[in-house]
Image 1 (cartoon, one colour):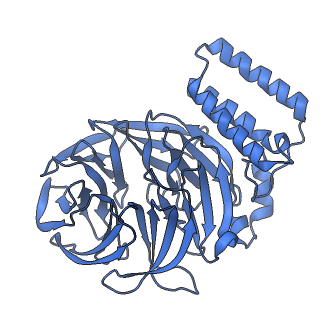
Image 2 (image 1 turned 90 degrees about the vertical axis):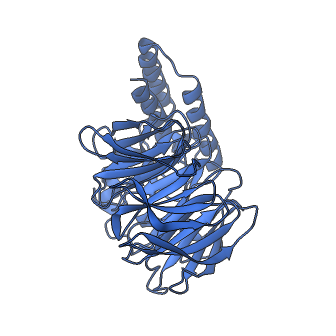
Image 3 (image 1 turned 90 degrees about the horizontal axis):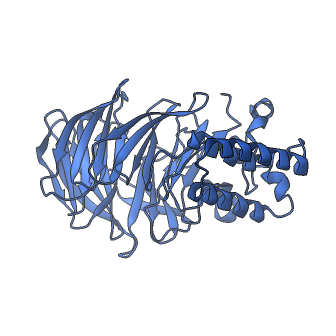
Length: 431
C-alpha cells in the first residue's frame, strides 16, 4: 500500500512540474529528484496520514497551478503529465523525426520491490508487457507493465548474494541468472516460477555475467571474476568439454551475435574487449583475438550487438559502455569480431556498472544509456555532438545503472543504484 501511495505522490508532483519551473527547467529537474529522494527516505507509515497528505498536497497544487496543465516539449528536462496520453497519440502517428518518435517523457509507474541496486533490466522477447529485474539484494522479479496498474508478478528468491545478470530464453519460459554467490540458477517462468537447477562455478568464483546462446538455448555462456569464459549445458548442469577460455581479467559483460552466427564478445574490468568463436552444436569455445584495448583503468560494464545500423551504415554495429565517461559505437569489421570506432558520446560514468542499449526496432538509430548523473540519455547515433541528444529523462535521485526497451518501444524501463525502477511511457506509440 505504501508503494502505491509513493507512486501517487510522485506522479502528482511530476504532473505540475512544467508549471513549477516553466522559466528554469533545471530547477524542475532538481525538484523532482529531491522529492523522489525524500519520499524514499522518509515515508509515512500510518495509512490515515498518507491519505490526508495526498489530499492536502493535491489541493494545494491545484490552487497554486490550476487545471491548465500543458505538456512540455520533448527536449525539456522535466517529466510530462501522463493524462495527456490520448491527445499525444492523436497527433503523433505520422511524425518522422527521431526526437518525436521517442518522446519517452511521462512517468507511467514506479516499482520499489528491490532494496539494493538493480543491476539489469530486460523485457521478455517479443513481449511488450513482462519485465525482468535483477538486484544486488539477491532476488529477481518479474513485472507486468501493461496492466492497470502495473504490478509485480513474482519474486524469485534463492541466490545467497547479489544477482549480477540474467537472460530470457527465446521462448520466454526460462530465465538464467548469475550471482556473486558463485552459482548459476535456471528458473522456469510459469504461474508459480520455480528454480529448476543450481550450478556451482567450478572455481567457486563470483559469476558476473551470463547469457543464453541464441543459436542453442540449451547452452549458456558465463563470465566470472577469475577471468574465465565458460559454456554451461543447462539441461545437464555440466560445463561443456572444450567450452572454456581464460582471459585473465574479470569478465563484466557479454554479448552474442544473434543472427545465427557464433561470435561472442566479452568486456573486462581492464578495458579489454575480446572476441570468441563458439560451435553451437558442441559448446566448444575458442578465443579469436583481443579486438580492443580501451584503457586499463576503464572497465567495460556493458556491451551489445546489432545486425545493422541504418540504411547509410548497413553493417553490424557494437555498443560499449566504458567507465571513462563515454559510450562508444563501433562497426564490426570482419568475421573475427574486430571493431572499428565510429562515434563516441560523453556520458558521466566512472564508478558504477552503467549499461546502455540499442532501441529494438531497426528503423531508427536510437541509443539509450544510463549515467551517474541520475539521467537517462537518449541519443540519435546517426548524428554527432550535441545534435545527437534526442531526450534527457530525469526522475532518479541516484546513478542510473540499467535500462531496457520493450519490443515495440512503447515502454522504457530504467533502474538506479538505490533499487528504484521507473517505467516511462512513449506517448508517440499507438498502444
